[in-house]
Length: 206
Image 1: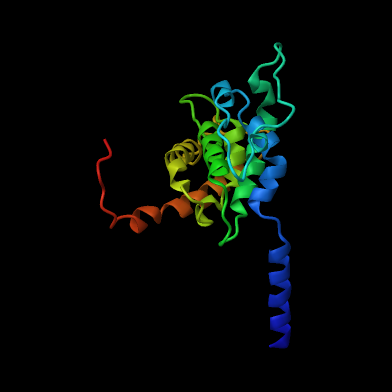
Image 2 (image 1 turned 90 degrees about the horizontal axis):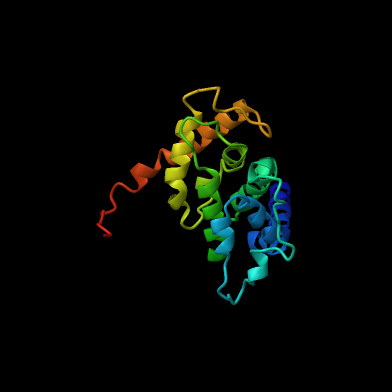
């Protein structure tokens, strides 16, 4: 019993010393979010301008902006973009139960997911999408506020990956087998949601 209490005590110490998501995003959010939106100039132009009591605009936009040279297309930065979005997924998926994440960070993260999960019919699935699927297996299990807003994009991505069309799911940064395995885990997280919300009264919003 004493040994068990000691193990629990050590676990509590490790949890209390662990940095929260907001502090990590304060440090690295500017670079990660800007890299995640490469190729989406409409999003970069609408970067957060309103002041916030807890988050400055510099935490959502780095001091040294990423400028794409004229001779390079955004597609050339696909692997870097995939790595940035994957890092964001790992940060948000490590949220603790009682931890609160700023709504500004959540909004930018969900927008990055919606852009990264976009599937063009008949074209190969992007490395960014593969990176999101691999790194977001816990996304629907950590009780992130408003996470259901990205459900349609995840469902569309799963429909593109799981049928097994190998010509469309060839990735550079991750293996196709790993992406399919992660996609199945995400599907298992999504399946219970209709049962959970079936008793909620539906209302017309328009």
